[in-house]
Image (tube, rainbow, N blue to C red; front, side, top):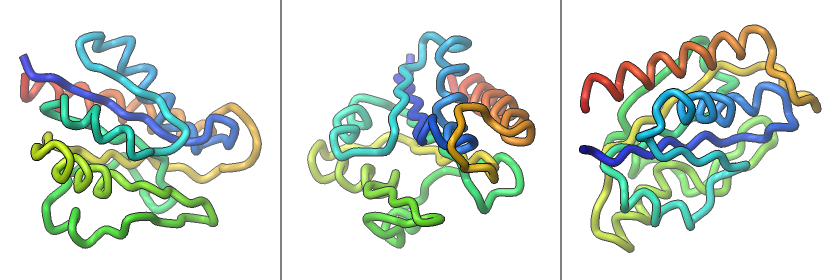
Length: 152
């Protein structure tokens, strides 16, 4: 059986930025065989978790996505992505690509990596998701579920 890791990240006090965390929480309840982590932001320590997995899903809010977008991280993307990015004044000091590179260097292995962007637009101080993002979280859970079932 493949080892699956779902990482939902974002700030749960900034409205739609919590989309990745909320999606991972739902996936954890529906697919207990998948290991799920919910974190405020990515950190280098997560590379050790990647090394133990066969397939990883990174779930995050996206202010540029018009719909839920899931794609495999390619080597070309991995090499082209910066070590850290800033979106709307918020820094993600470690990116999924940076964690993959770290995993390869430290553990000499790399899982299949999916990047899943969830549309987000309301990032003010509150704990609730907007209606649009809440619906997108539901769709994200469906998309990840289909991907899990397609490659058992």
